[in-house]
Amino acid sequence: MNGKLGFLCVMLVVLLSFFPKGSQAQCSICTRSVQQMGERPGKAFNAGIIYLAFTPLAIGGILGYRWWKQNKED
Image (cartoon, rainbow, N blue to C red):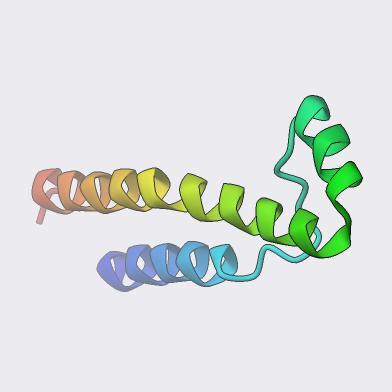
């Protein structure tokens, strides 16, 4: 059952990462710069930040899951 629970937790994190609606991923300097560009470029900028943050987190999650799976006691 623990394998299924771990898989469900990983899938939940992956699923929630695809819905970044309402998340604020900008520092204060970037926020001021984006506000001058307008609404549409600002949304694209924010989506780009989340996309760039997702890749290393996904790699770390996959490596962590494989490490956990390999070292767990059967």
